[in-house]
Amino acid sequence: METKKGLTGKEKFAYGIGAVGKDMVYMLSASYVLYYFQDIMKTSAIAMGFILLIARVFDAFNDPIMGVIVAKTKTKWGKFRPWLMIGTITNAIILFLMFAAPPTLDGKGLIAYAAVTYILWGVTYTMMDIPYWSMIPAFTEGGKEREGLSALGRSCAGVGSAIVTILTVMAVTSLGTALTANSTTNITKSFTSGDTKINTYVIELDKDGNPTSNVIGYAEDKTDVSVTVTGSERAFEGVYSFTNDNTKYEFTLNGVTAKTSKVEFVMDSETSAEAGLVFYVDSEAFSAISGSDSVKATLTMNSTLEVERVGFKYFSLVVGILFIVFIGITCLCIKEKSSVDMETPSVKQMFKALLGNDQAMTVVLTIVLFNTATYITSNLLIYFFKYDLAGSNWQGNYTLFNTFAGAMQILAMMLFFPLLRKAFDTIKIFYIGVFAAIGGYIILLALSLLGTKSVYPFFVPGFFIMGAVGILNVICTIFLANTCDYGELKNGRRDESVIFSMQTFVVKLASGIAALVASVCLTVFKIQEQSNTDMNLAVLLEKVSSIKNNVVETIDTSAVFGLRMVMTLTPIFVLIIALLIFKAKYILTDKKLDEITKELKSRS
Image (cartoon, rainbow, N blue to C red; front, side, top):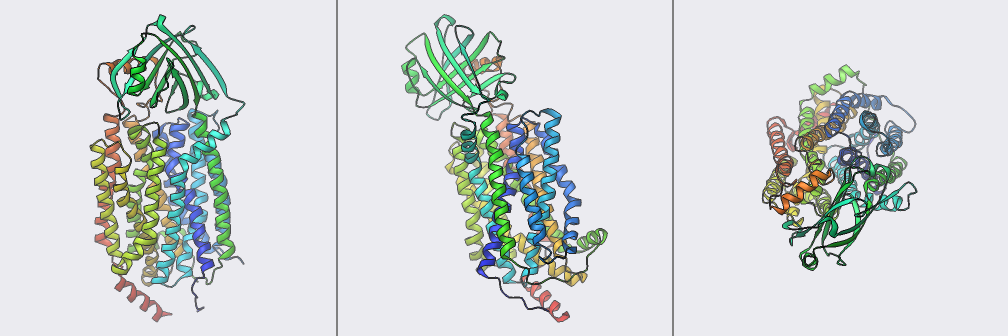
């Protein structure tokens, strides 16, 4: 048998940079594909949820088969690197196409486009992910060396996830704004109170930015208002509903410019004889305006509808290019030092072998449940910031929170896990991680029920949850690698590719289940429908009347309450189930692994 040497620093760097690239791609898809198709492209949330889940069911057949294909591959470049490169290039192309849905598509056509591109994305991701992780047992001995490479891969994957989580919203906005600013396809439309009856109101905001019952309404003959809106053709389809959520705006109101403001302009159609316009201003501006019974206002609005669509398209292109470059470095710098000689099973034998490895099945089920819990939260987090915490700076707060959370995940992988490993075995560290996550969700639930509006208190649950995510990602990969040794002892065959194909499948299955849960939540509680982005004139006027009478029925009631409950209680429930299953079934302690290693060496 060929003696294995330790990995060089160059090889470790090359392996790690590949993990950064592949998890940048994965996180972009896992966290934002539902938001892209549902919130930006206006596809049915429930339809998207089923598409994402069906794609994962398809992977149940595709992923293990890919494991067999990798096991059978024999080339002068090895069995892993060819599939790494092929899968990476095709996946990057599909990623770009997925986030470049033609804006002319709608209804069934858009759903079909989402289904085809997402399923193809899953297939091509599998082509590179299985050989990537299958390298771990093939490149390392058991024990510390394997743990070290597993921790490195997972830590770097966490860096990739964090980069995308932190940068996406702001990068999408910046790219989209730059690329649509001078678009020749933009349309500009103007409306004046001389041609259209514009029901104009000014509402005072309190110090927290919430509307008060102080409302000024102006008679038609006391209104001199001009509104200019610029946007793509899509922005002017159906009801004209332009707010601070979907536009950038500027206005002067009786010569006053508010320090804090919101605005809503609604018109049921271009030919409508009536429109609604509401200015929300701070107390100082309201006091300056309230002395007059007439209003003279000039408002300019630039739709950001295309900003997000175009931004996601080109951000996915940037991520795809980086993905190819990073995996290219992996393939160039790492050579397979040894080839595990294994008999290639048929698909039937493969499933039989997996079912016969009770420890692999236990770890697989644990990974599904753990990732389902965290992906439910990550899928709903952007809606929580956009429609619950809200505010004109929701994107900045969302980015700030993700920066902190991403840093905690990376810190947990690179610092917390090594420190804990010095004092505890991997099983105890697993329990620490699960209990930390549950504790974080309980704190998140408490903050949500208290109606906390500042982003900073949410750093506390973010610390516990994302710290746990970082630790558990490393631990679960180590556990899965350990089951290869167990399977070799029990079944007489070492099926790395088969077992690690299950990791790819179960993580994607978890994201599919989480996306379905999130889409059901969005549909049942009508999160987007109750936001200001979907409003007609009658709804706007009714809303103004409710505010004036101090009866505010906004998204901050049952809809957001439901969002908060799904984001917190569901993950807690799922994590408890994972904990109970793991405790009852997993037996691969450090002592047991040493016994397995000795037994395998005695057989060689």
